[in-house]
Length: 204
Image 1 (spheres, one colour):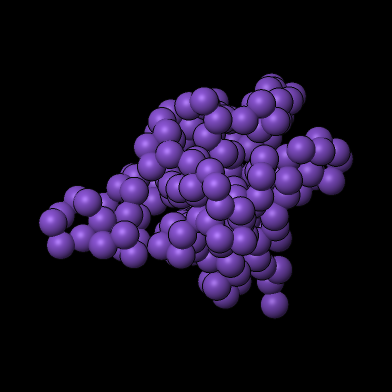
Image 2: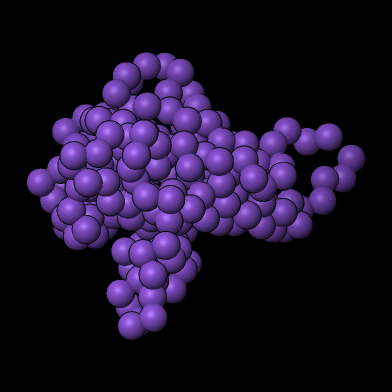
């Protein structure tokens, strides 16, 4: 029996809200047989982190949105990945992303697009959210809808600034994060099976 594919969720969380979102992404990954999630906090840039990322079939990046940008901690990780970039160590891996902020908007798109650029520089293939927008997109929408914040590039979440991570993000945002994790896992399986089918036969 072959080993499960690995999806690393490389994330930073300042107050715990984005960590909860990351856990929902991981649960989505683990819901797909044959794929396992590996939650990695990028606060500590140790050998274990870089080895896990090297061995991963897909990497899902996650950062809170602070002042319309990724957190300083996540940016330190992104810049430290320059050594990997120089060797194109993540070339061909799948990538996706998620973010959380206190504001409904908060310029979350800016963070997600910066994660896309990071993945592109590493030669990775981006997996978008793949959901229609919910909530205010139609007059009959509900805040309980999947993708209630109407993102396309990645999973968005909103956590009111006066609520702790035990109360936020909302259930709909966590279900959206779960969807992203499962989508990446299923895509990783399709990629793996496609590569196996395309592999040339080895003759003695």
